[in-house]
Structures are given as structure tokens and as C-alpha cells.
Length: 381
Ligand SMILES: Cc1cc2nc3c(=O)[nH]c(=O)nc-3n(C[C@H](O)[C@H](O)[C@H](O)COP(=O)(O)O)c2cc1C
Image (tube, rainbow, N blue to C red; front, side):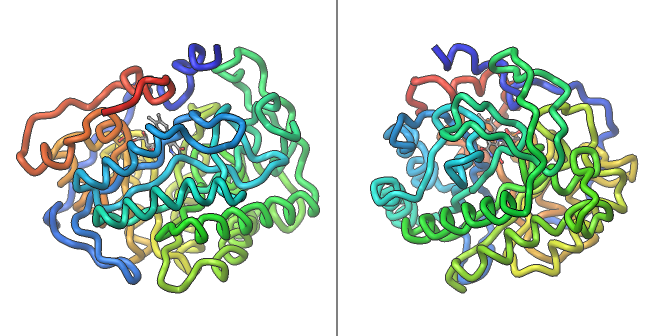
């Protein structure tokens, strides 16, 4: 059974800490202060990070308890709820078994029930949309295609199957247009389902992220070479989807310097290159940048600053930060350089996390192994 193999998935591997813990700046914002973003006012600075649950069956609709989990976090005072990564097309976007979609009427109706209840609970709902790129598992993908900016296979095998990843086809212009269209159609489904915002998944070594990085993008056309060229695909996705998102709804972009495969590789050369990419994002009509780190306090690129600090230097757009934020002290420290703190594992495993933060309760940083439960059929509290 598939789920039994899941625990070795990359999200769940502890990475040894090699960097320096960077001291935080003095700015102090109350975790429980409201935050205005677009037409919304978040009731506090706390959000649920996107977490893939692989629970969907053939209909590509998540299990009811998985949807219920999102609603319950909203009812328990989380201000911003991000969905699992929902796939953007039928040809090559799905990278894991049981991923969800939001394009058929039944899928839209299923998500509509969730967004209504999240809103009724006073929270804002964000749909994350993803294309797996070269982190592909052809057997779970309806059309079995694997595409990437360049025909470069991840060095490590797929930890879920033990098999090498498929060698991707370098994307043709047709593929590029097709994938962008998939993002647009999925955004339309998300809007029809009542989401308050959309997040484009540009992180973790998946398709958009591999375009951004010179490690995985070795194209010689207008989509490769300089950082500006490598950013072109992300820009085209953002520009294509924005007109389909009503002006009073949100568009976020998630980005990281690490990928779920070959994770020893720094995807960007240095702090300058990271800030160039952030600068390109800053110029686009997006409402927030979500920076995914393994640990928010780690020093980035030997710069003496952490990822949020480096990002903040280049943009005033709302900044969301994630990575081992597990108790009040770490949440406040992370908020010193960001506007919203996101939690994955703590909110996965502790439904009362926000109340416990408020109470200043001592809380552990959960291990990745503990988060394996996300991929089982056990309903979460
Ligand atoms: C079970 C699980 C599934 C995840 N799925 C996604 C995903 O679909 N999209 C995404 O951008 N990040 C995903 N992540 C990464 C989290 O959003 C988050 O960045 C990471 O867990 C670090 O935050 P934490 O230390 O608070 O857990 C996942 C993490 C976990 C534990």
C-alpha cells in the first residue's frame, strides 16, 4: 500500500543544521495584532502552511477529514489557511499520489464548502497551485509525462519508490504555453470555489523553482541564462493568472532556496542572486511573497542575515515566513523580519497551537517523522 512508503518522503527528512543562528532585529510586532493585506484584515499574524496530504481518490477530491482539518484550524484562530498543493494540469503536473484538483464542478463544489466555512470562521483561504516538474512520478500522473526546463534528472532516487526519477523532456514552447494554461484554468476553478486568494508554488525544486535556478535550468533560449531570463517563466505564470483573480482577492508566490530532491544543493548562487529574483517578484502584481526555509533563523548564503532579512531588504510587499516556528519565542523572532508567520508541523499536530502560543505555553519543534501522520488515513485532531 502506497501510504506505507510515504514516511521517507523528503518533507519528512531532518536536515542537519550546519549554519549560524542569526540574531533577530529589534522590531517587535504583536503576533496577535491584525494585519491588512489587500482587501482583507487578518485577525492575527498566524497562518497554516501548505501541506500535501495525498488523500484524494480517483475524483481528485481530498478526504472529508482532510478538508475538515483546514476548517478546524480556521475555527481555532488561525488567520490564514493555505491548502495542500493542488495540481495545475492533467498532463504532467501531478507528482504525488492522491493530489487534489479544482477544475471539475464536483471538485469546485467540494472546495466551496471548505472556503465558505473558513470565511465563516473568520479566516482567509488560499489555494496553493503546483506543478511537480522533474520531481515526477509518472505512474500517478494521468498522462505520464515528465517535463522540466532542461532534461536533467534529479541525482537522488525518488525516496517513495526507490526508483530513479524519470528523465524529463526539456519543455518546448508548446509545453510552456500548455502549463501556463493549466495554472490559469486551475485559478479559475479556485476563484469559482470561493478562495480568497491563490498561491503559486514557486518553491521546493518543483517546476517553477527549477526554472529560477541555474542548477536545473540550462536553457539557451529566452527562458534560460541570466536570472532575468530564468525568472521569465514565473513572470509569465503570474501575468497569465492575475487577470483571472478578482482585484479584491490575493495572489501570493512561494519561493525557497532548497528543493525536495538533491536538497544539498543551494538553488541560488548567492545572496545577490536571491535578491535579484525577489526584485523581479517585487515588480509584479502580487500581494505577498512566502519564503519557505528549513529553519527561519538559519543564516542565508553566509550573509550574516536570514532569508527573511535578505528578502525584506529587497521588497516591502507582505512577507510570509516559515520554518520551525514552534513556540511564542520563535514566532515573535520570525515576525521581527516578516508580516505573517506560517506553521506546518506545529499546526498539523496541535489543533490548539494558536491558543497555546497566546498562553506562552512551552512547545516542542515537532520532528519530521511525527508529521508522517499527514500521509496516513488517521484523521487529525
Ligand atoms: C506533511 C507536509 C506536507 C507538505 N506539503 C507542502 C506543500 O504541499 N506545499 C508546500 O509549499 N510546502 C509543503 N510542505 C512544507 C511546509 O509548508 C513548510 O514549509 C515546512 O513544513 C516547514 O515548516 P514547519 O517547520 O513549520 O513544519 C509540507 C510539509 C509537511 C510537513
